[in-house]
Length: 238
Image (cartoon, rainbow, N blue to C red; front, side, top):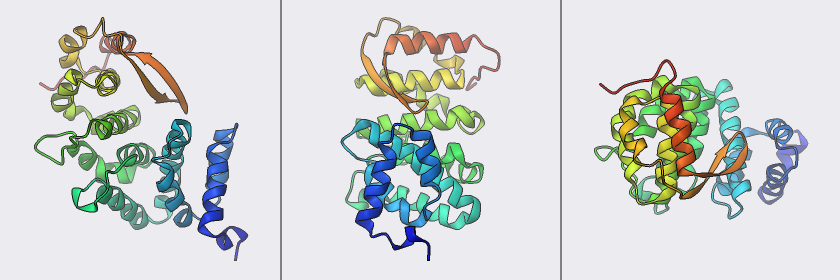
């Protein structure tokens, strides 16, 4: 039996934490993928709501990588983890589901098969006629997850533009800013007028991109998104 399989949960969690705090995170992800996926998932779930923002976001990245690799070998195991995420976001679970939308988005961005099966479910959490998430903190994670998926598989998201536009009017600056970011990724021409209303929005938000935590003003994201709307391939909901 490999040495890693003999680790207790506590020891394994400490090992995973070391990887998540590593100065060379990209290399750490590769090393993390060498550990038994089914054992690593539980510690990663626990780090999805860690108080340290960097650790929390790195856990999202690592989670997606681990589940994608596991799903390549055993698709049903990947589905089981997706259902666990969905349960975490269910009112009946008794929890709140911190980090779950982000983890789902990252995983679907990394695995085409899971994306085709679960992208619609991820989007349903943004729809008032679906599994709408009312908590603004969860909406932040959801919009990030949708944006992450949009970066890789925009074809699975583009039809969602009509009900994502409403998030541009959120009282929560981070929700607003992330919605702006998503509109840019999708080249959503229908959102232009709403985006233009936010060109003076000086609220600053935190955005995790390229494995880095960035500070951005909403108006900066607006300018970036408006520029993308001018590029070819912009989509319309009409």
